Length: 234
Image (cartoon, rainbow, N blue to C red):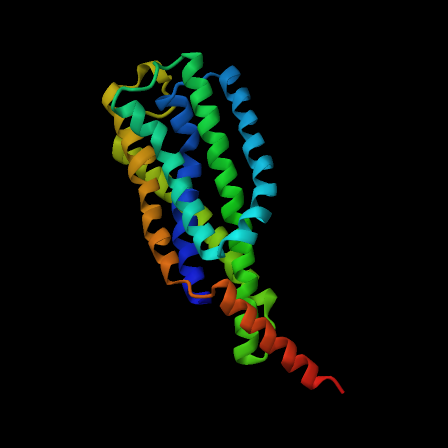
């Protein structure tokens, strides 16, 4: 189960790192947001703050596997829907205040889902630690945590590398003002960075289905661990 979560984290972090490194190009060239517009994006943090109370409610009612799958799937949807709507010509034109608020609301929804996903992922790691302790007799929080941090650190560098390759592939001119960039280049930027790249998250999302530590399984693991510790007490 740890190997499964490690691979999920590795792939997800690689995609997320590349997307994050390209976000400045999306806001500047695809959405053409000004510096004043960017200040309003901070309001999306409200979504993250509202997500914390929801986590406790969700954990009481659902298995972590289902929460993780649903939050990751909805997060993917929130990450691509506004770009898809722009490509098919549904959204208001760039510079519209309506467009700005649509982006802010979508980003708030995305942040909320990412908080839920992050909290549940950390909780899943704790369950795997219990399973590992039951099988091996060792408690290795430091080793497991170091492996997860490795995923994040390693893929942050890959994000910069892949981001540069994408910019070269679409031919985005260096230090060019947004108004001077060809429409086809902007379209390719949105198609690749806004749609194709995030859709790679489908791979780790599909892998979540192989996670097998349900609430009942973890309860049994905890029971066995408690019995073992009681038996080992002088």
